[in-house]
Length: 177
Image (cartoon, rainbow, N blue to C red):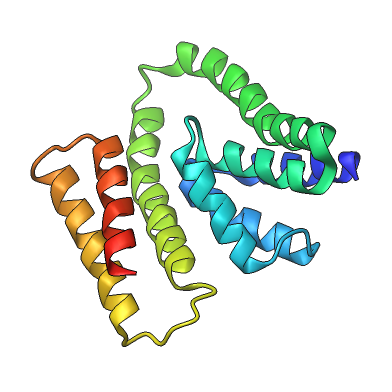
């Protein structure tokens, strides 16, 4: 089981482009294909991983690894998801230092921004609507959208610290749900 966790998360680590939130759907797909955790448990893992310091993908991998293989599984999954990125960053840094003045390289990074943004938006929508037990038009969905809108407003317009927004969201969730 430990080797299987390691190799699954190495594969995820190789495909993780755009940060932790962008790769959540890939993690969910791989975990669901192996029946490691059900969709409800996955949402709980993502919620817990999002509250912990560090990358949400790495934290989710650690929690899934622990759930499936204990401490050894947590270590295997964490190393598996981090190792490809570490190796790629080391190689790309060496190449980038040589090519940093190249206009094509600089332009390609600007071209990647919309893709990363799209992956993050897709992950948010997919995570927000997967495994819901209530209809799309309900008080629960209205409350969810109200909290989401409030969070976006607080962070973007009023520049409230994200940790404070997380605490306020938790309080709003307790009150509304």
